[in-house]
Image: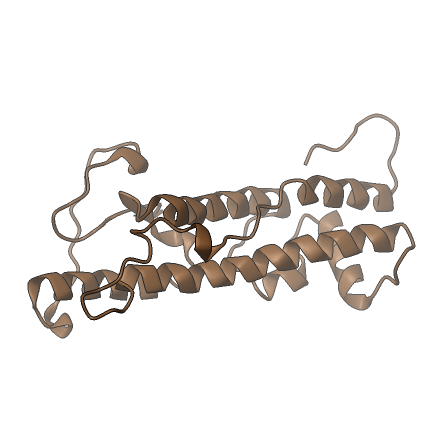
Length: 201
């Protein structure tokens, strides 16, 4: 968040401004009832497709993080104003804001990420936006694998989808990569077999 410049600002004012700015950017919790029919498409046996199960599990984890971020930002703001007691957990959060670090209470429910706080929050918004697009619009043309809490689970689901389609035992499948020259992951052509992935570095 951009903080007002000019006269010297006290630490509590700085943290209060940061908390208020972050609070205004917190994404809303994702709701399964808003899902596109393809997101949690049923299999012939009546279950949910593997990628749909994976999305649901990841979405639940992200929703826990969204709720944690939102509720603790509200409580921190109230604590700075003296409306509630500044607990040890809130004090750790307060100090993390001053040091541009991820608060420990967020880190307990977040995915691994070493970015400083401002960059972390922007990345957090982008991850939620990707998951929300998948929820509302169905599976994307390309999957942002580093976005996930559990990327290994996505890779297993991709194998399961191919195994179901081809009747090849999943234990006989191995991954191979074919680089493309596309620049926009969201507009790339869906492959007949396998999945498009992006975001690796």
